[in-house]
Length: 365
Ligand code: NAD
Ligand code: TYD
Image 1 (cartoon, rainbow, N blue to C red):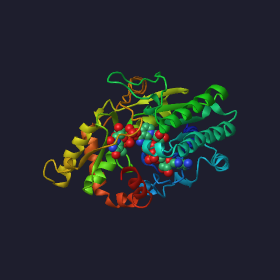
Image 2: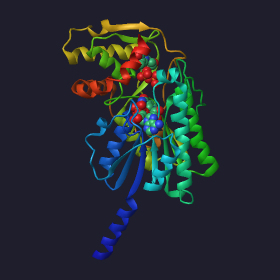
Image 3: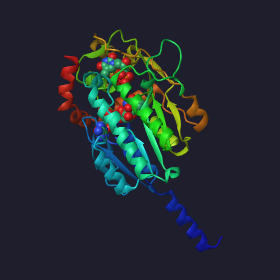
Image 4: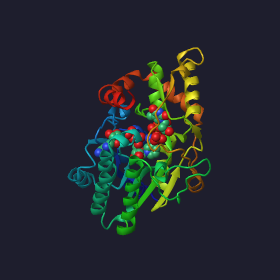
């Protein structure tokens, strides 16, 4: 190939590689890790982060990439149809990675309507904008919806959730996520919208809002506050380090088969009380406490209504088709998470003031 042809070929390829992606909920826990991964790895893409900055959204999570030429933040509400339409018109997105949601089961028990608004209506608004603005160009586009294993309901002592497991959501949170999953599939079926859905197990790691089990308990141990264990503590969750989830999302977005679902999990089941004991041991070590100091803070409290007994994911499909498996072992991930929270006092103080204080009082006192 002559030099000029090679130059033209490379230029054309670069233009082809350019994409503008909408990531919703990018200021939240998982979203911020996804945005960082994509901004750093795909410098030829423009990543537009749409987030309403609710109590769970925090731009401090992305301070290291703020100001990058391929990153744009847009503050706005996915429930606002006109705003979502205007954003699609402005940026002409090639793809959407949709993470924005109300995500905490306990809050969904107190305020289910908020979950319907954001998780169901918000998702439909995005689907509508995608359908209208992508009309006739579907083949080059992708709507990637991030969901949860909680849509499958609760397992007994045996068995794993497969992609084909029937939906059986038990909390207002999981019901709203299940509903949004159904709408995404219905847009694929009815209008031919190209989509992919992934359902992931419980994530943990840096930047998680301290209302979820692991960051809440790290925070409480730091403050010598009680560790409120729901019921008998014998509920089981499958835990995955958040960066492994972000890596899976990248793989599915680029290599997953369209109109498919992928389960993502850590092959890492823990009963809550065993996990809490491990966390207490690691915290005592990290803080230089004498052994068992943190365990003395454990306090069994009234159970969560409708508490799902066990979640466990079979992640064979993503492993076989896309070669993904978790890279971080749980004990190592927990150690990294604890170090991050202990080194980022400032982040924790900022997010635990205001709204969170009110929530905590209402939930536990
Ligand atoms: P999060 O609560 O930390 O973040 C949610 C983000 O969405 C926040 O930044 C918030 O400001 C934003 N948001 C909320 N309502 C919005 C609205 N109306 N308009 C625009 N932005 C809005 O949640 P997360 O834990 O990072 O979860 C992200 C996604 O992953 C969710 O869809 C959740 O269902 C799913 N998921 C989470 C887990 C988990 O363990 N955390 C596991 C599986 C799936
Ligand atoms: P959580 O982090 O809220 O995630 P999810 O409910 O989506 O699985 O809770 C994880 C587990 O820990 C769940 O079984 C509920 C339990 N839990 C407690 O025992 N005490 C708490 O204060 C919290 C927040 C959770």
